[in-house]
Image 1 (cartoon, one colour):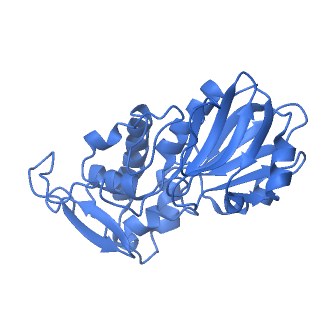
Image 2: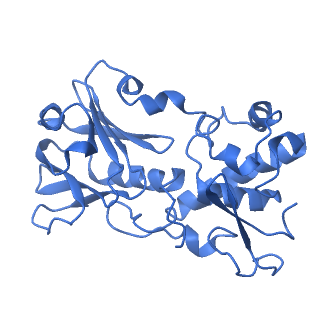
Image 3: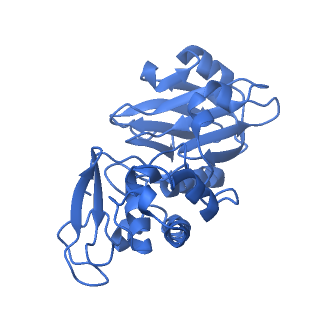
Length: 283
């Protein structure tokens, strides 16, 4: 994939969440190792490991692009943000440690959860019992509604955007408006809704907001079913690629024929981010 500015988006993080829930639950964390101190955003690396030692994860949740592990019994949370190149990898301790491994958590049953992150922008948090996750993981405070939730409606989208003089693509990337959408699925949703990424929000009407809303939900549902999109470093917890990229309508297909009309897919820059579209199918 050709766009290096990407981070795992909602479908990729949801795929990881489901994988973690299928593999890591109710297994005691017996110890660990922090190989890069700055990966631990809170508290100190030593306190981070001590807070998790002897604990088990009851359930993994997702909020936007954040993974939040709910700790069993006494409570507390384990937070993770993959950022650009982060991966959580479920393996055995005797497997060779990857060059870019930043944190290792040793689990009972001779298993291990590794946080691998080439670009080192990813972060982890240990949140004490009785403290809401958003009090420590402050990025959670700024998130808009989940795009597959009942709170995210076409009326909400119109109310938030119809007065804004900014391109619709940029608005969809704003996590305070809607959580979890990034470059890939904004491009795809706008193609599916027939609207060009550079069109100003203030120029859109109610029916167009309805189309965008429906397309966002459709493309995210399809991408989750395909286990996300593999670009650069994304893999699920067992190291398996996502498949959505093979069926993308426009994303990262500059110069290739549109799957609908055959016209070459165009690419432009909007506020430093790539946007892919079809000039015939999108108006």
